[in-house]
Amino acid sequence: MKPDSIPSVICTVDVVLLTLEQATLQVALVRREREPFAQALALPGGYIHAQDDVDAQASAVRVLRDKAGLESPYLEQLATFTGAVRDPRGWSVAVAYCALVPASLLAQAGGRVEMVPVDALPPLPFDHRQIIDAAVLRVRSKSQYSSLPVHLCAEPFTLPQLQAVYEAVLGEPVNKVSFRRKMDELDMLEPLVGALQTGGAHRPAQLYRVRPVYRRTLSLSARGL
Amino acid sequence: MKPDSIPSVICTVDVVLLTLEQATLQVALVRREREPFAQALALPGGYIHAQDDVDAQASAVRVLRDKAGLESPYLEQLATFTGAVRDPRGWSVAVAYCALVPASLLAQAGGRVEMVPVDALPPLPFDHRQIIDAAVLRVRSKSQYSSLPVHLCAEPFTLPQLQAVYEAVLGEPVNKVSFRRKMDELDMLEPLVGALQTGGAHRPAQLYRVRPVYRRTLSLSARGL
DNA sequence: GTAATAGTGTCTTTCAGACACTATCCT
DNA sequence: AGGATAGTGTCTGAAAGACACTATTAC
Image (cartoon, rainbow over all chains, first blue to last red; front, side, top):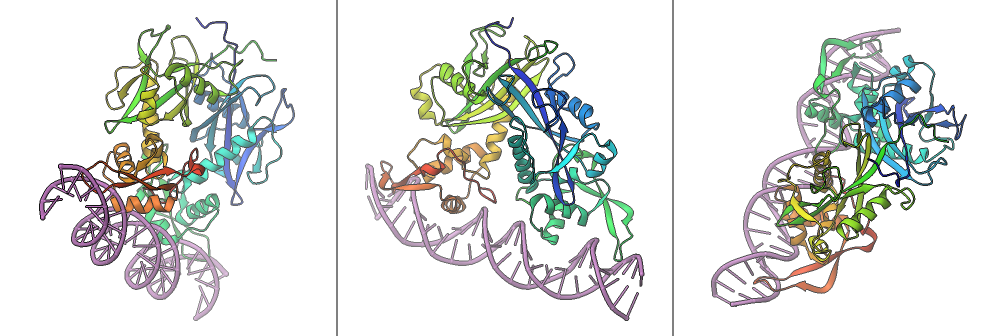
């Protein structure tokens, strides 16, 4: 029943897959196989398949599986980028998603993607630069008052490790006492009783994991940190 | 060059137009003229017109003008609602926008929309209930740490009036001293020198307006309120 | 003057950061 | 023992809320 006076619009999803390596946020880029911009590095993305995908989030999951060979525990809708000029094929709608994975998960997925530091991006096709910038801004912003960075940390992890992740994402040192107080208040982590991280020439650290309840939900703090 | 193996997707925008009346958040609904759900109350929305609109935000501006007869100073992309089952016409993408206007602006626009308290919504077609819920959640959340509620207040206004707006949106009383301290810090308002709100049987209040610099930008507070 | 709300000075409480101390490993 | 990092107790300073007080209008 769709009026044919309405010209069709190109509907795609793009995924900003972020990870933390060498204390730096890195984004996954893939070489485009098809035109436009064939051979160029770009965000993994693709058409929405109306016949296969129940919604755009499912499209993003499929794109992530096909192009990066992994399933991201954390996948959130970021924003939608639209307009007549962002894609040379015509008027387009790109629903952008943001995925966060620990570096270890990415390693085992194999080298189908190229990780690039978000602070040293090459020129990118479409408006992918803006999409990445929006994702990084969102992640940094949410990290100030939520448990979001735990998704960048492979379980189990120690509190000093997690603190280092927060510091890398926020780009500034975090007070140790305050950090531990907050983690305690958020009540999101549980210690693996008896499990300690040994090996260093110093006191071993308690290992933690995220409480299953908070696995896919963020825990928010009223007043930051 | 779009492969014709890709079935087309219905692309629309929906606008959640919110205002504050009787100390309650109210959303603008319109009677649908066409199928599906003709005659039902629903969010103002419509197809993206690829030949007219430069992007989806422009579509939202057009929808707001055509269906509500007004131009909203504040218009922000909310989220995108997608899927095979949300619209009986087929697989659809709805880019949702959130608009905030003072009640006075809505009044002069004329009665083309029906204002309904967001806490007493009738059954709505599509997933419009979820879209409104997402908008209200976003507005309440942002009001905790930003200047967003000023867009619900007609200028010029007094600080007690603005405080009442914050309290209505947040649904809880706000400390007067803290509130004034914050407004002072945000440095977003300027007093209209010599202009006082008189008429009450009490001390008149200073009238303020938003500094032009902050007209379309939000002012964020580090620690809430 | 009285009632009513606007606006401010100041005390108290709460919370984040600084600092120092203890704990426990490896060499 | 000595070095290194994990983890904690406690003090301090900043910021938010509570309260009380002054200011200015209408009647």
